[in-house]
Length: 280
Ligand code: NAP
Image 1: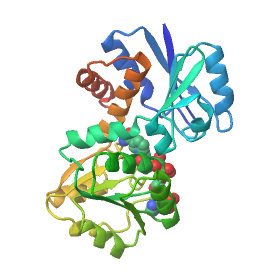
Image 2: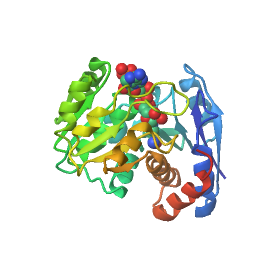
Image 3: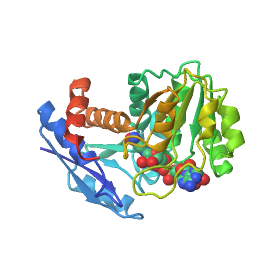
Image 4: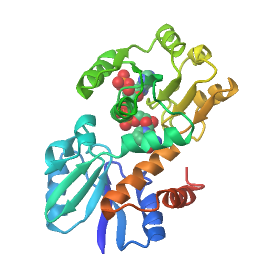
């Protein structure tokens, strides 16, 4: 049996064991999946241990995604560009690092009817998730991606590190957000504002009033299912989606990497969604 897990600190909150176990069972794969608490600074020690003990692979959440970039034996193009690894496959003692966040986001975005091709996209936030999102948007043919962030230099660093033309950085003031919202056909929230467990909320959501009527609004947050941002966007009659499908699809793509074959993706995504019902 292939042993798999998610590593992180904290890791108790991770939904990966629930999602992956449901999908493994549905696909009839000979695999087990659990959560392993690995603290910051122990990424290298964990990887050596996992290789030695015959683990088949693992997913990584905070604080290991960046550290793994330098530790794996081979890195996929997506993981190298994004600068983060969320999936590691171990085969014959070698660790292969991948990133499925960008592909998972894109699948979820398209399922919500929000194709980014030739669109001008306003991305709020410039953290780890934003990097995968901006990369995926540019790869999918977005015309321009404006990255608005409280700390402007984080947005600037994100745009330059990706090394793909088409992204630009700006600040997070009401005026700036309103100005760019009015020129966008897609808005993606990659900040943690409104997430369950934080007290931080958008102070002012009036920038949403500037969005053209056909704009799609996608919030990476899935708990709560409807953030204040999504509620306001819905009231304005805009197409909205939360981050649940992104969570599910990054997991589907990770399982295909672990299994080293294509699986019935749609059926597995449905299984994962069913397993998460009532948990968020
Ligand atoms: P992160 O690296 O910590 O980045 C957080 C971002 O939020 C930064 O841009 C930060 O700005 C901004 N921010 C935090 N507090 C703020 C405030 N009070 N005002 C304005 N901006 C603020 O986190 P992450 O890993 O990118 O995750 C971001 C969100 O995406 C989280 O809610 C996470 O749950 C969600 N997420 C969802 C999925 C999914 O599968 N659906 C996957 C990954 C992440 P500064 O740079 O100024 O600090």
